[in-house]
Image (cartoon, rainbow over all chains, first blue to last red):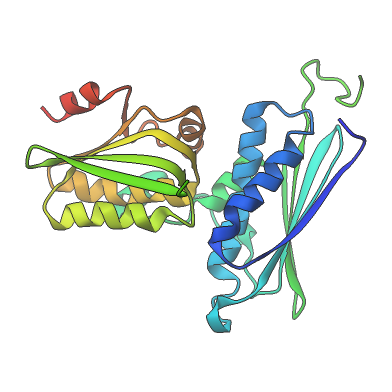
Length: 153
Length: 115
């Protein structure tokens, strides 16, 4: 892979843009030594994070308008995705692990995305700066098959 | 190509086949939600969802099935998922849904669930 992968995109707060975001994440993850399954999982984790922001962050704004910035940095050892918005505070770390059986019994359709993010990514860290932005930083590390340095050729 | 295509076909009076193709995500899940709600409104609670054409699913898409299952079962029906792609199966496994839903390989197996 190239020494370093950097991608950045800014998308309007509209779920129509999820397809494009997934494409960008997929392209970046495919350049890191992840297997195909891990690439798919990382795409899912980012999609869940952005979908969650699109549902909550700008709901108090007129016409729900706002932007979401996705920044990806990756090398042969890891992929880091930072997602920023300037909407209201929403800390995914405050969400408890869902009980799927309860979801079924109660007919709950939402509230599973953060669980998936946590399951898939090695690090999920949220930072809120009042009046500035929400920042969600997620990292996935490469696990080499031999257990050694994944950056060795 | 549309992001999500939904085709419905009644099987007898009480069962319906829903064939889904494309992406089932936070942008498209409401289409499926409306399709299933429409079936429930018509007292059709036996739902066979053909997932062989679903390229991608997120928790928003899976949530439609999760949120509809109890209504279907409490009304004497069920939601049977047919031939999910590897990508879809992966998400079901992550969510622990493979133990909750009837997941079968083909339409004949799905039909047998309702006999």
